[in-house]
Image (cartoon, rainbow, N blue to C red; front, side, top):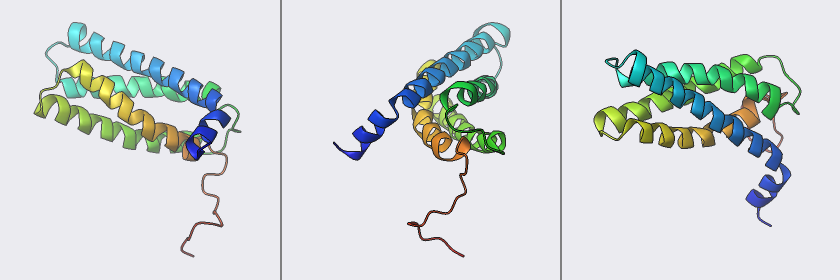
Length: 148
């Protein structure tokens, strides 16, 4: 069995929860975006509406990940701050992707939301698993060359 299959078999429950939380977060984001862009603020810039929807969905996302997805990892000091850092990077990537895909290249806005969510899922799962919700994300690894 290759390493990826062994990893998935070992951590399938966490991956499944991550996908459920991520999917529901996407629905929150898409719902808020639709509410803003189609009902409440129809003349507003789509990129700003996307950023607002993303902010709301990220608060929802952190809460569910902390309480359900990564609950087996003991809460560690600083996880909220690390989450903000990871989300800042992921959000910046999402907003830049949305701007170029929708505003520059003219792709349909909801298609861009879906594609952005799929790309962001790879980054955020890895970052949350190894950094955000890890009980000691700064622990030195013996097999990694590190500066003194």
